Image (cartoon, rainbow, N blue to C red; front, side, top):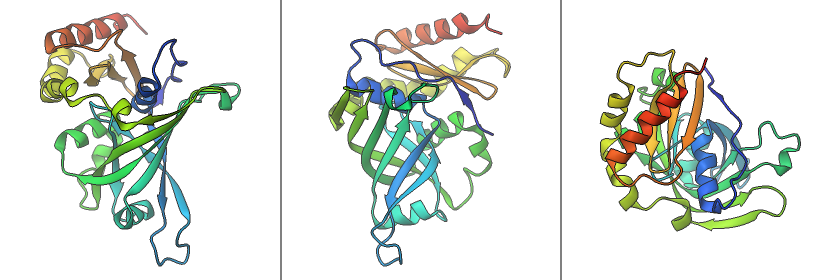
Length: 240
C-alpha cells in the first residue's frame, strides 16, 4: 500500500544546501536508485536505474530494503557505488523549478535493527516481506550530493554538510523507541502518531498519510525532544 505525502515545502529562506538535501530525503517515500550493470553481462557498463522505497536514519543516511533477487542488488554486490535521486518537485507547475538532490555513495549491507525499524515504520507494507531471507537492509554511506533547488540554485554538497554530526544524533538514536512509545501512548490509528524523530524534526503517520514537521532549531536534549514531539502531536489533534 502506498503512502500519501504532501508536496515538500519550498526551500526556506536561509536554508543551507545540506539541510535542504536532508529534508528532501526525510520527506521522500520513493527514490530512483542508479547502479551499474554487473561486469560481464551482455549489457555490461550500462547505468541501471530503478524505483525503490527509501527511509532515512537519524543522521540523514539513506536506508533501503532490497531483495537479493533484484537486478540492482546484483549490481551493488559487484560494485557498491550508487546514486540516489530524491525528488521534491511533485505538484510544481514546472517541475524543473522544484528541488531535487542526487546523493552519491556506497551501498553497504547492514544488520542494524534500528535501520530496519525506521524503514518499516515509514513503509508498513514492507513488514510483510522484511523478514524474508532474500530481503536485506542497505545503508548508503554518502560521499557527496548534487542539489538542484531551482533555476540558479545548484550546489555540490560534501559529506560533512550532508550528515548530522554523531554527537547530535547518539542520544536520539539511543532514546528513539522509548520516546516514540511514550508520546504515542493513548493515540489510535485514526490519529497522527510519531514514527521517527531526529534532531531536526519528527515524522508522523495517520493511516496511509505521512507528514514531517521540522523544528525551528535542532533539539539539544531528550527533555526538549519530548516537549517538541508532544507539541507537534497536540497541534495536529484537531485536524479532520
